[in-house]
Length: 281
Image 1 (cartoon, rainbow, N blue to C red):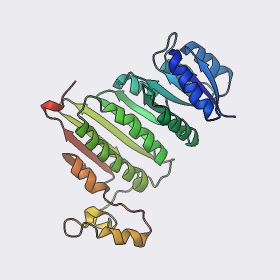
Image 2 (image 1 turned 60 degrees about the vertical axis):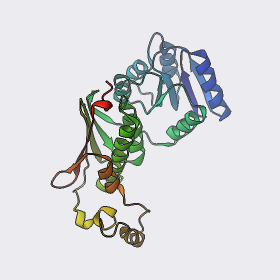
Image 3 (image 1 turned 180 degrees about the vertical axis):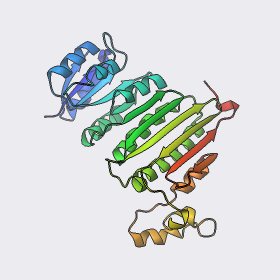
Image 4 (image 1 turned 135 degrees about the vertical axis):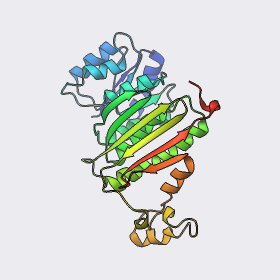
């Protein structure tokens, strides 16, 4: 029996989510405020809790904080229309598993619930959670990488859509490289991620636990064949049994203004500069 707690002070939202999940054969318990949610989470075992942020008596993040040292183990999805960096980072610090914005889109929420229940919960270490400087230590797993991409996507509020898209694409490609090639998809190994938001730039740094690489050894990547033979890596990938692709570094370079590696090439920094029209905060 998969028991899910739905905590939201808005009755309409609470009923909507409850009915959606019951239709999927989940056992659903509801709470109308944070104090009631905390009480129920202490009393019974839940696989997942959907927690609104701004509830009376205790907000959703305070509920998680109160249970941090508890023996109760469950995953939490934070739901809120408050998309500020402070709220998002508080959710990460309290080990929220996922974060979704209101208003709720029913099909997307059901898919998120099912995905969250299927995945392995791996802890993410928060080194810094200031809006202008975020630093995280993340297990080298695809599930953890996807969670971090989801969280970091919300941090780019206030940026034009084209900047959000280009930064997101670069981050996706470089993070997967770090997790897959540097970390060998070993969840015991960690990737360190830094995000800095300054007045006129966005900067990311990704450091993986691997030994690094040399471009000359990346015959399976498109970047090693440019500009003369941009698809020459395809045949090599097929011979090595690798999935189609190999354009990650090329896409990352195309989407940012600066892309810098350390000497070993197991740490990368990329920068996107912001012009006056991009500064909305």
